Image (cartoon, rainbow, N blue to C red; front, side):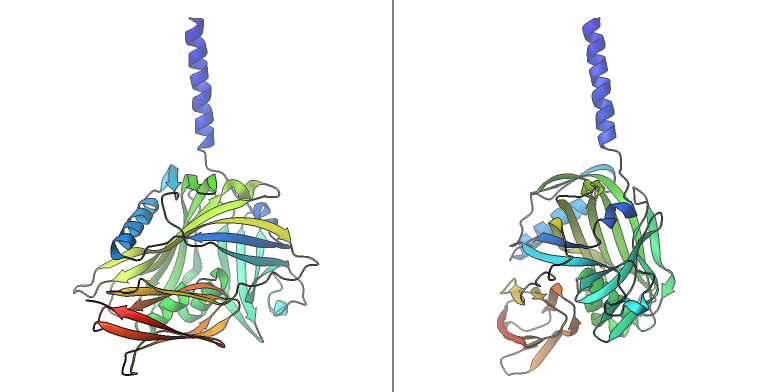
Length: 394
């Protein structure tokens, strides 16, 4: 009888502890206040999609399986993926001072994030993490209303949207998102579909759609998963709204520490794929993923961290049948041009021509209509120039 009682008590305690461990945690402005005055130094491990179509399909399938896990008490295991050589970067979070470039325009800010441009924002308890705009060089970009990157208190099923009514100034929003995230997906998508977006409007939606355990090669963490959806309405030729970009970010309980020694996070991004068939088939396709390990260190009295050197990777895969990707890492905002020529010297495509902020940016090359053969890629980024060969097979 006594043994049975003890066993029942132990099971009850174990069940209670397991239930407690699976409860969603809550993040507030105080948890992120530790960033201000620090350099957020991250080593990112980007997922390697592979060189062959089969490898890429398998990787996308594995990422989609992680995306499909939403709701309470989930486990997201990244350890079965392959990763590229890690990339380390530092982002300073500077206390607001009137002497910072463009600061006079953003007097409601309490900090500035330096990502090539100075991006001004504030942390508001029981409200959110808001950004007002950015200053780059002698110009400023002021948002129509503050951009809520996070909403506090942040926990499972928290949701919000921006702007309050759909915006038609898509180019300004794309420029801001590109500067804020260091990812060129937003501006590249806008440039690619500019003609179709003349009468379009945009809203962004967030929801904390799951919680549980994130497993990476750096260890396991309790996390909240934030889903961010960029939705465009009124695109020429489409009757329904289009979700042109969706990302899933895992925010770890490391942020609950007063002085986190190590912060492990992860993200998967998907982009819109529209088939050439009629009627077109529209789908979200995993386009990038990573996990990162970050630390914090003071920036006061120290020089700002060195930016990464300018690096070009790809194109990969090579040879290709339909699509290839270049990856360009920039130490500062640079004008970038990617042009592709056939062996007669004729320009056959211009995948990108515009300004990119500092950071690492994928440039997609769509070759599905090109004849088989050898092509030359001409890439220019500021003063740097590269020439690469690309082989198209059928």
